[in-house]
Amino acid sequence: MNLKDISSKELIKGYHGKMIHSESMTWAFWDVEKDAEVPEHHHVHEQIMHVVQGNFEFTLNGKTSICQPGDVIIIPSNTPHSGKALTPCKLMDIFCPAREEYK
Image (cartoon, rainbow, N blue to C red; front, top):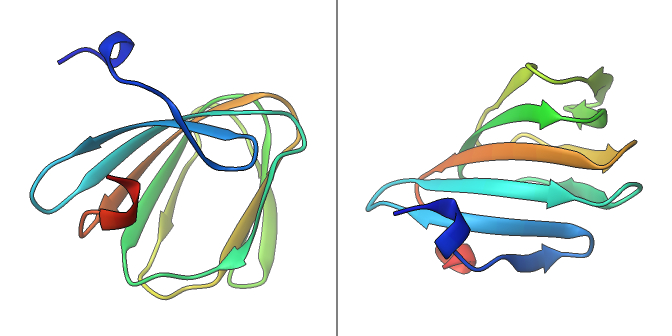
């Protein structure tokens, strides 16, 4: 498969994602609009986030940092987190188990 052939979905306001699913994982490729926010939330899924492009303010379990290209964040299951795009961003997320609601 090729990402250019996968339709983008705006699953959260300002977050346009292309999703790839296996039996046990979801790999999300996000194009994020400047100032788009994800409010604090948590989920059963383990998550790994990679900042590909842009600056992304990220709060994990109450600790905020500014993530830049190349940064990788591991988000354990059921850990509160939130984020805001300070610039237009490209992010990748991997979720395990698969995010059924993203299919």
